[in-house]
Image (cartoon, rainbow, N blue to C red; front, side):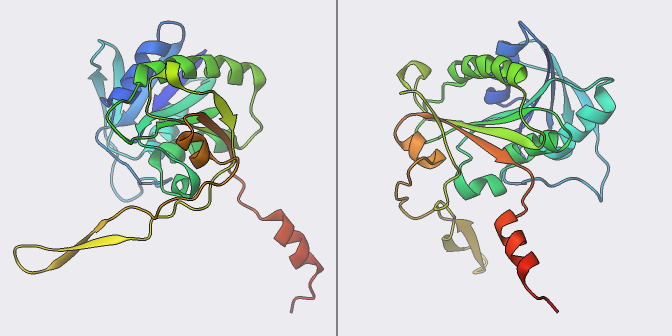
Length: 251
């Protein structure tokens, strides 16, 4: 299988290196990732400055490419400049920190997977919920290797990708897998105000409120130590409202 790997943390981040090492023993893997961290950049692309590409040597002696652009740029360039025929699968991650609920709208990890799905390529965004320091990248990489084969054989619908999140525990302690919906209650609303040495104010995001459990959601699955798999579609049309609007006598 031909697999394109990318992320929003940079080409030398531990999560993407674990995926590369795990997958490259059995598949043709190409790593194309940002040259530095590009978190929370969503589905942004680079329009007003050139993108530069460098060949890089990875920690495990593999070869890859770093790009000065965004995660979505990496996928676009990979599909249309690096591959002569499309890859079978695009995997974005592994991100150190969950991408669940409304947060997927801000995530560069998810943006890269969405870009692949928009171009008709099966894709997955992969993240680990980060409460402590126990991030089992290699354990989750082995799970993703199994998922890659299943998704390749199954075939996702056009314009749909998988958003996968795991709890930050050893893979052998995970309770199981849940197919989930996107949570709606983890929106960041708070800012911490600080003052710099020149007496000017500045702000940091200060987290979110205590989250109440919602049944069958990605957030709730992680809180109960399950891997969450959420199918996400690129088409954002609200078809129920579309039908209602068609029935109105609009001016």
